[in-house]
Length: 155
Image 1: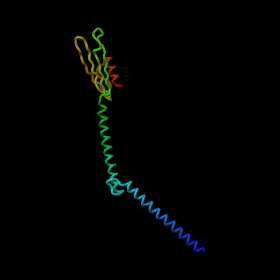
Image 2 (image 1 turned 120 degrees about the horizontal axis):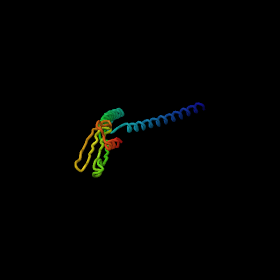
Image 3 (image 1 turned 135 degrees about the horizontal axis):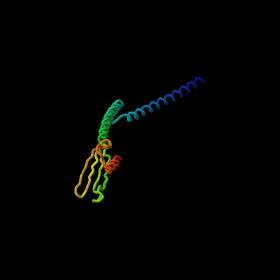
Image 4 (image 1 turned 30 degrees about the vertical axis):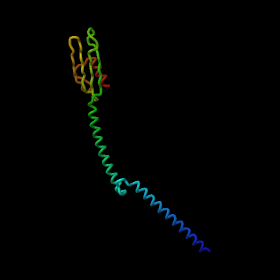
């Protein structure tokens, strides 16, 4: 009777082991198919090809990133030289004549370089002046109106 129970136990164990092996094999096959679908690109044949394609794409992206960074540097250099501040002050330098026909215009870039344009208007004549600005300062003396236009253009 012991032999029959031992044989039956071995037989049941073998059947369970066989079922486990079959289920494990099916699971592995299913997983491999899913992985192949996951890793295969449209142009790739296998995982190695997919990795090669991804590596090429990374190299292209790095080149594009470097090129974009260089272009941004050039744009920033040009932007520093572009006009940033512009202010116009109108005034009447001769209280007994006319109205606020005279003006001072401050034009500056980010480095506070630029020019002050001013005009003095009277009935007999009109005079126009241009004074260069470097670093927010002029080597020429500025009138109060020109100073005001410069200060407002710096903001």
